[in-house]
Each structure stands twice: as C-alpha cells, then as structure tokens.
Image (cartoon, rainbow, N blue to C red; front, side, top):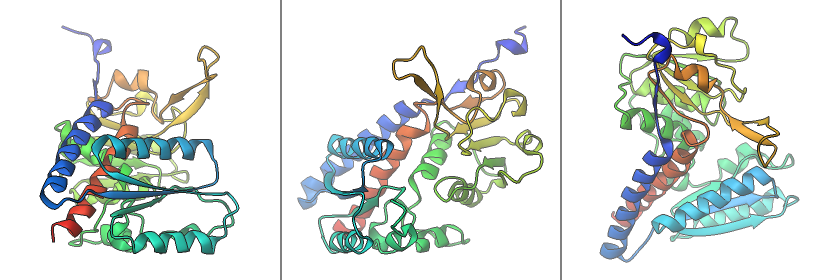
Length: 299
C-alpha cells in the first residue's frame, strides 16, 4: 500500500481550462458575426504606466484579438484629471459598439476609484464592480448582470474539475473587494457554508483546517502551509507574489499564497501559480463581454 507521502494532489490546469473557454467564446463570436453582422466590443482604459497594470492590459487586449472581440484602447497619462477620465467613460457608455468597459485598477491617488467605477454603465460593467452589481451579488434571489472575473474564474475551475460546492465548508483567506469578498458571496450563492479569514482572525490555521474548499487570496507568499490543509481539500490559490530567486533570469519567481510543494502532499486538488487562476480571470472577462454583447445584439 502506498504511504501517505506518495499522495499527489490533482493539479487543476487553469491554462488548459481557460483555453477551452476561449475556444467556446470564439465560436459564439463567429455565430454573432454571421447571424447579426456584429461583434462584441471591449474598451480597456488604463491610466499611467504601472508595469504590472500595463502587462495585465496587454494580456486582455491580446486575448480579445484571439477570440474576435473588438478592442477599444484608451491610454491616459498618469496626471489625467478625474473629470477627463469620467468623460471618457461617458463617451464609451454611449458608444453602441462597446459592450464592456474595464478600468484597470489601481488608479492614481488623485482619482476617486469609487466615483469612476460607479459612472460605468451597469450594462457594460464587465468587471462586475459597479456598486449595484456587487449589491445584487450580496442578496438572495437577485442576480447581478455580471460576476467579478477572478471570483467567477475560481468557481469555474471548481465546477469544470467536477468539484461540487453545495453543502461544503469553504474558507476564503482574504477579504479584498476584488477577490475575497465577492468570491465568498458567490460560494454562498452556490450553497457552501462560508468562513472568511483575514488579518484580524486570531487562529486562521484552525479555520482553514476545517475547509473542504480553500480560496487563498491574502497576498501573503506561501502563508498557507501543508499542515493547514484538510486531506483531500480543493485549494484555489489566487495569490501572485514575487519572491527573490537569483537562479531566475528576472531575479524573482512567482509563488502563491499556498506552499505548493507541501500542499500537493495533502490536498485533493490544487491550482498552480502561475497557470492557475490568472488565465481564468482573462477568460471570464471575455465571457462577461460576450454575455453583455448578446444581451444587446440578440434582443
């Protein structure tokens, strides 16, 4: 009989799953184009020149091209006045060829993020961060027009890996507006029993150990050890942390919030970093964009 140390978690290949989803979307885009002569349009606004933001935006624009979604690029300087950014948003709101509007976060300090996001037309809020979309997400029996991309991607990884959520104990590590909070609401909608662990939680390990499903989104490199994980649990690692690594050309490597090597020996399923949740976020953005486009074009 194999000893426990031989156990190997099933790796959830986010890259492969995202590629499958992209192919599905590309087929739907072709159908729309053939039937109605129209394609979905996604506007991506970026302010300033943060390296990470630019790389994310580049990925999003490239993904659009790959599936046949028309990309509207708006690049604004770091010192753009808030009023000018808002008038750009209004311009895109009224452009019938744009079905989704995404403002790349974070915005520079002088711009009120909440104000800008609430100016995006509800029907075009493909990021799912409009206060009304989040509000509906939080309420029983209501459905937002869009679910936020990363949380939606986490649940899609579970469902496409055959992991059921109903009746399971789920623990979300982190309570950010972008991942922790909305993913906990989505899990609740899917009938999980949800706990949220955050920086003020006295004994995080005890709670995490009870979880059948762990969503790690704290932004702390390798915070969750193998000993924290219940045998057979499903682990979705949203963390992307750079740690120094002189053996790498860039001088660093990316790791998640979970100690991957250790977790593999205990978990039932786990997502790698990179190649887990990351590609899914972009795939879900494309999914939201085509869903928004269909609502308009097919009506």
